[in-house]
Image (cartoon, rainbow, N blue to C red; front, side, top):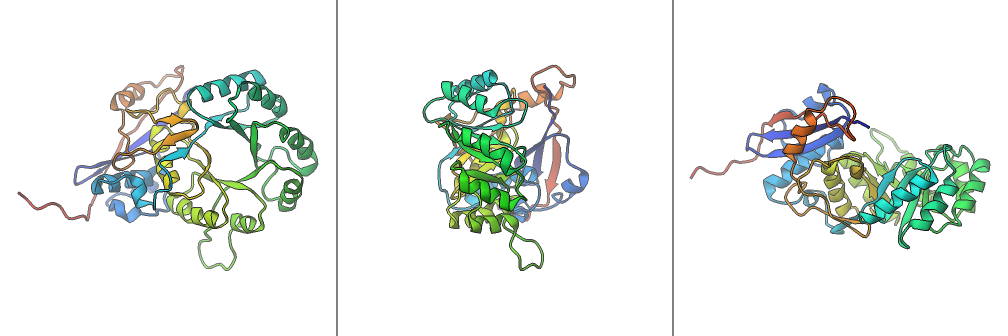
Length: 346
């Protein structure tokens, strides 16, 4: 399998470099232009793509000599719950995946659930090999369609100790269906989306906020949200004592950013996913530390990670398919018109 990853290096006129990235091809120039000639501090609580705003937080932290989380809020934890991710696979392959995940220190796993394989059989196979403290969350993406089809499957899943939650068993717009399922199934229900901010003039709260107040779900995914949305929503969820699952896909760079977010979000207590483990190399010089389902928040300045230039150079030259993962890294060099005072000469 091959995948293109774009790595961004933000250069400032003070000589600092901030790191960002996104899986896939480079963003359109229009998105990049919003950062050209600006001060990194212009993007505090940013509304831009997190892939680019993380580079601003990396720069701000490096300038101040502080870890990025210091610019996001008060630290709630030094180790962030972090989980494994896997697609829908056979029961045998699912069990093998659990062994690998557990062996690498993970204790939570998010698995896509589809009709290709029997999710109940998958669960039993994983249960046989999992450590006692290991848990799996199944992401149906609405594929169980309706209450009548979902109930028999969910009733079987709730008998299996390994299964700790289900994400969107039916489509989220079926509010009454969610309530019916929720009243009959003891497994936690997770909603994809945490946005509680309504932009513009509106007297109506957002959908997740309405459902949060109604108690229609037990947790939700902060998935690729902007920094502003993630930090604003985390306090609404904290007030409701409802957990959040962080989901920011990328290599070790994005994983570092997710750890800093998780360090300050009060209820970011569900095992997050970044899928960095799925890459052949995570593009940073020192791997993230994982123990018993928790990942250590980097302690260095900014994001606290260093780009592995040798790996970037290696993968930049791999354009032919065939390797486990091919990185075509494009370094976009930008200059900031930094407004921060420069140290006096001498």
